[in-house]
Length: 355
Image (tube, rainbow, N blue to C red):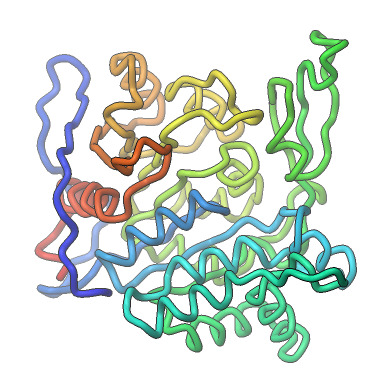
């Protein structure tokens, strides 16, 4: 917690015709003492999850990140290949996003994100990746090591891997070879999938049905709110739905669930995708998943009715807010996104003040 109040952004709910917009009580909500904060779990990976965490840490002190572990590029890929460890990069980014805005937090955030530049073997490695892997080797426990790094950084939340085994992401891609635009090929590796020139039809994990980290499952089941996205849709968001124990927890939890959409399609992975198309492919990978709220930037939704119809298939309403930075880049503003999350948490199922 930074003690700062996020500046409020404009938030609009898109309701089906004739439906009255009003706050609703969370399913199975537990009575909570006055001043309690919501327990929030955020699922994702990469910069999308970092943006969500940077916003959420401003409004709750009870925050857990559950992070994908399928990265096979850059420093993470090299450490994974050489040492057989989980790829630490997305875990490192999540820890950096949870660092506070004081001198201690910002100094450590810069340190763990620092990459060495040299002509030797250490070139390109991030300090945080090496620190995390060193603690894994010392302690032999993924969760304990990440908790210890978080304590060192003064992180405003906890970071967990979604699985304790390194995963490979594979995708069925139509037109991956431009000379065979109608053929569907299997593309292997998260880094390759993220930049594929073709149209991703579906993704799956190897090994199939990987085990979830028990602490991640427990966090989802105990949460008040679960936030999925934003982020690389096929390589950071959907993989959580391909871990059976995690998907079961998402369907069984009494928490309310918000899906946070991206500000723009991602080159390669989701070129040409409309906001509602993102929901459609999510539904193909987890047809029984229910959502409560779909959050989107107002300027990124050209067809609000179509998005509302797509959200209704998940049982969700759409909330529109201004959450993008004002510099024109497709990046979330942490304070505006925090204000949007805070407003959603208060409108949907709030029982007394969180703080």
